[in-house]
Image 1: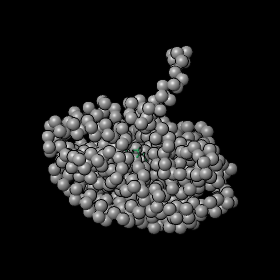
Image 2 (image 1 turned 120 degrees about the vertical axis):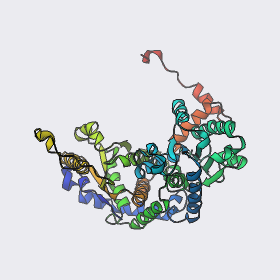
Image 3 (image 1 turned 45 degrees about the horizontal axis):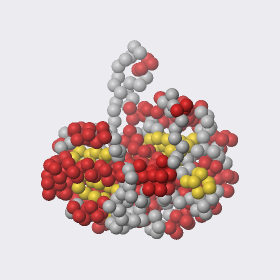
Image 4 (image 1 turned 90 degrees about the vertical axis):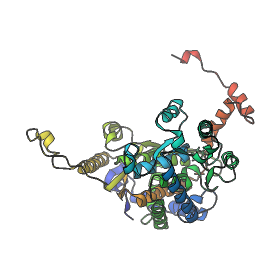
Length: 464
Ligand code: PA5
C-alpha cells in the first residue's frame, strides 16, 4: 500500500502558534480512541454496511462483471442517471481511472461504450445528450437507493418513454436499475417492466455507496478492474484497524480536522494536483458536507457543526484561490492530494535559449513542474501559518483509488463519532425534497404546501 499521510504542516513545529501542539494532540487521543471503538462497534450494523463492502460482494461482483461484458458488447453508450451519492462516485472513479478524453477516443482504443453521467435535471443538458447519443444504442443505468428521488425518477420517465416509442417491447433491455431491494418505486417499476437490477444494501447510504453496485457496475462497464478497487479498500480497512493515530491514517486525519474545527477552521479545502483526481474532491465534498454538517448531536442538543468543503485543483487554482488561502482568514485546512508517479510524461523541449526567463523550463518535464508547484505552494502556505496536510498516492490505479475512497469514508465516520453526530442521515436534504414534492402537489405533502403558501412573500423593495 503506497498511500501516506503527512501532517507535519498541521503542527506547531511547522506553523508556530497557529499549529496544533503535541500536547493538544495528545489530549485528544482518548477521544480518537473512543471514536475508533464506536465505529468498530458499529461495523456492518445500522448504516455502517459500507464497511462490509470490501468483504461481502463476491457474488455481486461476478454478476456485475457478467453484465458489464454484455453491455460492452452490445451498446455504444452507457449513461448513468442519478444524483448525489448515486452519481458523484461513478464520476470520480471514471475520471480518475480512464483516459482523460475517453469518450473522444476511437472505439478501437476506447474498447468500451462512451460514458456519461446525467446528475441534473437541466432540460438543456438532457436535450444536449440526445443530440450526441443514439438511444437505441444506449444502455441507461438508473441509480437511486430510495427509488423516489424526483430528479432521477423524472429522468427515468423521459428516457423510458423515448425508448418505448423507438423500441417497443425491447425498451426494457436498455435499462438497468440499481436500487433498494425492498423500498421505493424503482424496484416496483423494475419488476413490472422486467429490468435487470442490482441492489444497494439497506445498510449502505448514498454517499458511502461507491464501492457497492452504485459505483461498481459503471466502473466495470468502462473496463475498470473492480476487484482491484475492492482489494485496495480491503487493505486500507485492515491498515486502519488500530486506535493509534500513528498507525491509522484515517483516524489521524479525523482528529486533526476535529481539533481544527474547534480552532474555528470551518473550511476544508481539497486540492488534488492531478486532473484525474479533480472529481475525487467533488465526491469528498458531498461525503464531508452531508455527513458532518448537522444541527443536533446524538442527544438532540443544538450544535450546528460541520466544515464547508471547497474543491480546488492544482495547479489551476494557484491562479485563482491560492491568494485567499495565503492571505485571507485563518479558517481553512487544506488537503493536498499528491501523485507519486504520473501515468505519462511530457518533456518540455529545448529551445528559447535567447529568453532565459522561459529557457529555465526547457529540458524539464511537466511532471517535474506540477510536482514542484505543489511543493512551492505548500511551502508558501506553511510559511504563512496555513494548516495543510498531504495525502500522497504513489500511483493512480484501481487499487489505490479503492484504498483512497475507503480512507476518506473512514475519516468521515471517525469525525462523525468525534462530533457525536449522526454521520449517516441528511435531514437538511430531505427538507428540500419535501418542499419540491409540495410544489408539485404530491399527495401526502398538503401540509408542507400550506406552510409554503403562508410563508412571507418577497418584498419589492429588496428586488432591484
Ligand atoms: O448520501 C445520500 O444519501 C444522498 O446524497 C443521496 O445519495 C441522494 O440524495 C440521492 O438519493 P437516491 O440514491 O435515493 O436517489
